[in-house]
Image 1 (cartoon, rainbow, N blue to C red):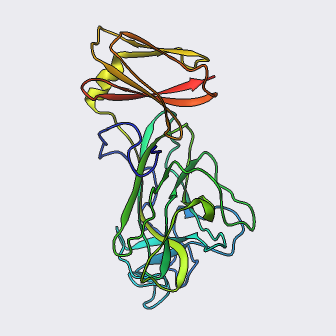
Image 2 (image 1 turned 180 degrees about the horizontal axis):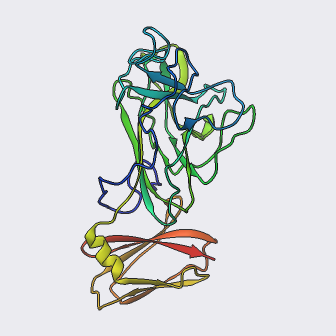
Image 3 (image 1 turned 90 degrees about the vertical axis):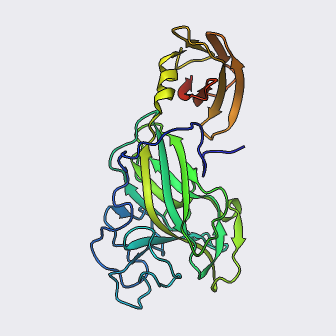
Length: 315
């Protein structure tokens, strides 16, 4: 069953192209110094999570002296032009049994709103000198600065958006994109691999260099709120869902004699479908008494394929 990963999770939506990107310095064009070697992460707004490690992300920019390890397009990791602008960054994400990891983190322009759906995207590329492509490379949103354990490079977590399959393209940039519903108050974004080596799918890429590790270039990071289409809003205005929160039954009431067969789908926050049904009744009830306490997402789809998602809290 698909989870919240590369593809859309629930709603067929229309994105407001004028929505503000909540990620500052999304293409790493703002920096306070030119690097001339690996590990000099001189990018404005972005930082490493505060934990002790022997490894640091790399910043690649064309202001660096020619023939350095961090020049663009040719550098210590391979050869790649930026997706946008003049620079990009790079992180280790698979350590060939050593557990080696690097992360980049940034404070968002504003905290995320509870119940709001957001779309995240970033461009990644596997350098030619690194021979391991992995899945589960992703983006984690948290309310506080993400902190690791001193001396341990792996930060274990469940990112809201991640790659489904290993990304092995060494010539082009590949988009990792997905949507999720914010719990509210998330203010920090961290990018990297949050899974142990045993919990990622790994592909050996033929013809790569001698570095049998996983490493990705990163560019063009974006986070924008999802805006419902007008037709979706019409359906939304015909609905009442109560009581919410609930300890057992929820009632969905269609108002103003709204006549349509409705498909009801209930998901947990991992994107797993746990209930589905159809009805053309003005009143419909779902028994949640056997479900664990927590937050669930109720998707409603009418006969015209208009879709609405409601957040339901189970007490």
